Image 1: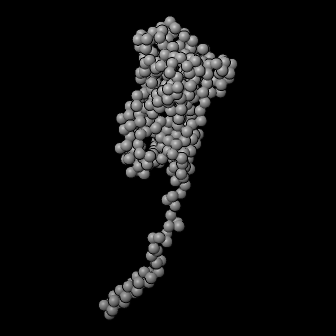
Image 2 (image 1 turned 90 degrees about the horizontal axis):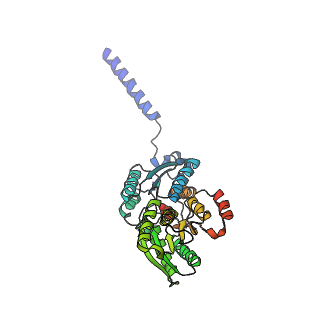
Image 3 (image 1 turned 30 degrees about the vertical axis):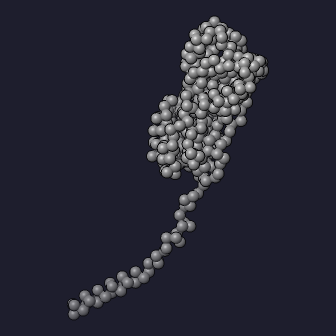
Amino acid sequence: MKVSRVLYAIAIVAISLVMVGCSQPPAVAPDQLTSTVPDAKAKKSYKDLIVGYVQLGAESEWRTANTDSVKEAATQLGVELRFSDAQQKQENQISAIRALIAQKVDVIGVAPLVETGWDDVFKEAKDAGIPIILVDRRAAVSPDLYVTLMGSDFLEEGRKAARIMAQLTDGKANIVELQGTQGSAPANDRFAGFREVLKDYPDMKIIDTEDGNFTVAKGKEVMQAFLKAHGKDITAVFAHNDDMALGAIKAIEEYGLKPGVDIKIVSVDAARGAFEAMIAGKLNATVEGNPLLGPEFLELALKVVNGESVPKWIPSKESQFLASQGADQLEQILSTRKY
Ligand code: AHR
C-alpha cells in the first residue's frame, strides 16, 4: 500500500514538471531580437563624444590661442576633451596618441610638430578604428591614415609675405629670414612660398636664414647673431611668425637701429602682439593665420564619428595687415581681435 502511494506521488510530480515545461515560451531566434537592442550605429551627439587633442606645445601666442579655442569649444558643446601638451617633443605626441588609442576615444586631433615620422602611430590609430584629424599642420603620411586636414595654406602665406616685402622695399632688399621649427609644415612651406615669389625680384636677396623655433627668445637670439654677422647690410627681416619678429625687434633696438624703419619686418600670424608692434611702427606687416579652429574641429569630429564624408583639406580663410593701414584702423581691429 505504501509503495503504491509513493509511486502515485512520483507520477503526479512528473506530470506537473512536464506541464510546467510545456508552459515556457518558445526559444526566440537571435535575429528576431535586434529591433529591441539599441542600434549600434546610432548617431552620436556632442555630449556622447570623447575627443583627444594632441597639441605640440605652447611656443607662441598663436598656439596658446589655438589651445584655448579647442578647450573653450569643448566646454561650450559639452564634449569630453582629453588634451595633452607635448612641449615641443614629437615623442611626447606619439606617446599621447598611443594613450588615447588605449583609452578608445572616438577621434583624435593632432597638430603635428614636424611633418615626418607619423606613419606607425597613425596606422595604429587606424587599426583601432580611431580617426585622426590633422589640425593646423600637415603630416607627410599616406592620405588613408588621416580623415582630414584643417588649417592654413602655408605656401600662400610665404608668397603673401614676399609680395608685401617687395612693395615695402621697392623690390630691393638684403633679407634675413627667421625660420619656424625645422621640419614643420609651416616652416617648410613659408620658406618655399617666399622664395617662389622672390624669383621675380632679382634685387631682393636672402643673405642669411636660421631656425628661430617660432619663439620670441630664439628669434631675438638669432637676430642678434645676424646683426653681428651682417650689421647694417640687413635691410629686411622675414620672420615665419610674429613671436620671432617681436624677438627680432628687441634685438634690432638693442643694436641701435629702428625696427620697421631702418629694417623692414614682415611676419606671419596676425596675433595681438603684432598689432601692437604695427601700431608702434616697429613691425611693417603680418600675414594672418587663423588659430581659432576649436568649433570647426569639433564639428568635423562629430561628422567623422557619425560616418559623414568630409573634404580632405579644409583651408582657413585668412587676410593680411599692414602698418600703413594706420594706427586708428589697427586699433579698431585690435579691439575686437580674439588673439
Ligand atoms: O603652425 C602654425 C604656426 O605655429 C604659427 O605660425 C606659429 O606661431 C605657431 O607656433
